[in-house]
Image 1 (cartoon, rainbow, N blue to C red):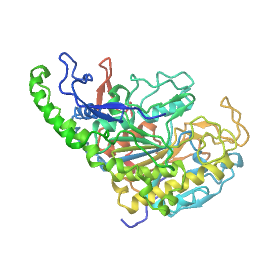
Image 2 (image 1 turned 90 degrees about the vertical axis):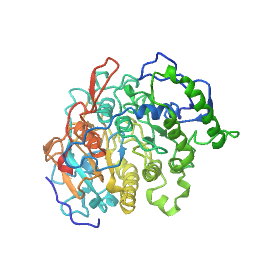
Image 3 (image 1 turned 180 degrees about the vertical axis):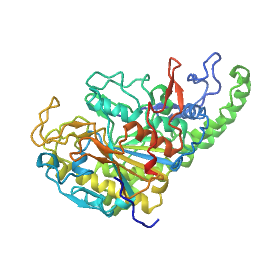
Image 4 (image 1 turned 180 degrees about the horizontal axis):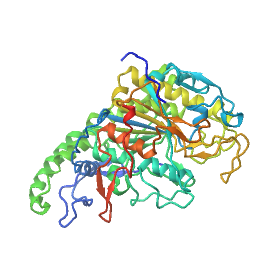
Length: 498
């Protein structure tokens, strides 16, 4: 079912030495990280690597061919809003008022600004912004036993099956053998301009049990493409580490050292085996400090109190405000992660998990949804008003949905009034970046248990994101065994969205 749109007016961060390497040691592979010699400028905290290495690695990505299908490269940036723990699709996005009570639950549907398009009553502010986004109600996957959070997170974030997970989908610690996250692939294949961030993760770390960072790293691409992380509480003053020079070092002093490096660089030419000079990579590294545009995005205190209150003085709301500021600073990819851990017991308060195995309705009505509705509606409205939404693809999604039948006893310990994991069918919000707004794409069956038409796979969503940002999802790279790997294991862009 498609509803046509109405016409509307148009833990801790890692430290890394910021080092100016004057020449590589001979005999190293082209893909390997060179040793740093001779000259240290100071300290910069970013992605766990020296910035010159970061830019040198990113520049090796060759331009990709442009597919002819619609929506390609319609977006300049992506904001992925990840709702770890997974909200109930029936109670938020896909109400079932005609289903039996044990399916439809306690919430009534409410009208939105789009005729025929309804949401759950717990999203009144988002209902007023429906002209700016689309809800897809037919995403799902048959997990073949992998029904836990970790496996679903890995699939959503990497576009590949979690073959290194346990049969029940339990998470394993991240490693450099993992396949790259979506943010890492965007950072590699469509990196931001000099003085801009390519990938930033804010809000909270992704946590499954005791494992932190499932599907979040650059994996095989190397640490140069890991995101810059800022997981501090955004309701307080943020202090991104590493964007100030040591007290006795000035930009002029750095420039003089670069002049010295140029002399030594000429003497190293013979042993560098014709590799391109690194000057421009150091220029890019310094530009982050010189321009300070990306760094200024973290100064939320410069926003008016009224605007901060509109987003809500919560970790989630202020993280969305930070995401808007990062997009204004021309960041390529921002991930905002809901602060509650994926498998955490639902508790009162603004930061608890969406994993409502029990007490689903009071948790959503009184705690989760007021924070989510306020923050996301403010973000969408703000992005649209400022003209940012048109060129920014926004996706809000959990790793799966929740079971249609309430309180059904399962192996996942569902209690009274709770809903279990449900990867077979769920919903997500998508906006901007060339996506036609004010519509519902796809339809679930009468219980919200299975897609009824226009079914899409999580891999189709990732292919859509790559497509919109201007990266062919069929792009291949090679793993450590020199085997070809695709950015997305399977799937195609959802052309009906554009």
